[in-house]
Amino acid sequence: MKSYYKELWFRVPTRRAFINITPQVEECLEESGIREGLCLVNAMHITASVFINDDEPGLHHDYDAWLEKLAPHEPVSQYRHNGYEDNADAHLKRQIMGREVVVAVTGGKLHFGTWEQIFYGEFDGRRKKRVLVKIIGD
Ligand code: ZN
Image (cartoon, rainbow, N blue to C red):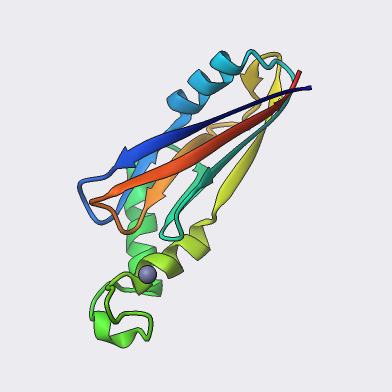
């Protein structure tokens, strides 16, 4: 069995954003030389997510509006976590959108369902953060 990993770095200039990282993950898979196996992609920070869904701007707007309803950023004083930090909402948003995804690797390709793409969800940006890509198989 082969094993490969890479850390992808992101510095999102805004507090919140959704970025399609499918091309970077496909590059990792190519680099790994693995044809059959599993690919794990996870955010390495507790205020960011990795999730799979459609690459459709309307949907991303809907996610942002929905997450802001569930856990509004302002007023930051409403959260007990916020003392030195002002990112309690980002922790809650990350919990809803998830930490990681696992995608099957078949014939050297990510084995997606219809319209599936991998996204990095940033909820407390404007600093460098990492995503881990780990691929195992043959
Ligand atoms: Zn925090």
